[in-house]
View: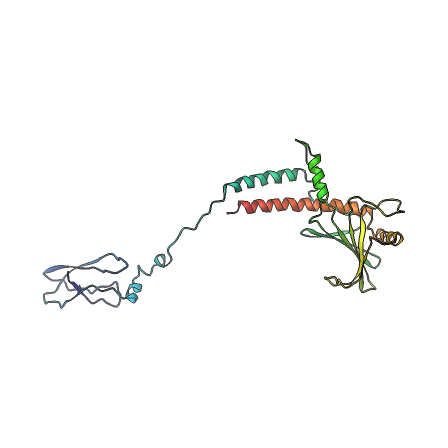
Length: 293
């Protein structure tokens, strides 16, 4: 079939208005394009004088013309709304989340301290995540005790708790015994005396001691005051082969500044409460992570 091209006004949607007169004539203009646009029909009556029509074969419409059509400029055509993908969690995640819910409830039931206990002797507590710091100032000195609860429960304690537990019995309380570092700073010096301490499992004291200490000193060194990173080039005294008299004086030096067996017992109680608190928080974070889709 032949197709007739009729001029189109600058507005692509406005076709020329033809004078109304007889005879009536029906004309259909099919827009045959690769986009499969719907046919546009125009029914008009031609004037009495003949209208010059140029027969031609259909050709694809130019791209600027197509882009100028309002219905092709619609945002829904350029950015069609696609449904967001929804991924289903594996079936085991639901059971895992329920287990964590039950575990959190049980841990909160046996939680001994709802808030962290205080340490007697005028110590101020600072907590940063799993790290805790106790600070005390006396007579021109600043004493700082720092410990971290990570890996503070001895493996033997966990094994003993599992062996002693009987069916339908409450789990034995695990005790946190972290290593701790004592820093003694004097106002008139530029050096800090650093004593690295720990809780031995056997709690064996040095020969000649009337009472066994529940903690021991492992290493002693001096570090520059005010520097965050300690230097490995500074001499470090290991107490494994140290004369017991010198070691005893070091323990007395700490006791005079409030770091004694009473302090160590309270530090264990504080560390155990902090470790349990962080464990419950970890379970809650793990539950939220498992349930997140």
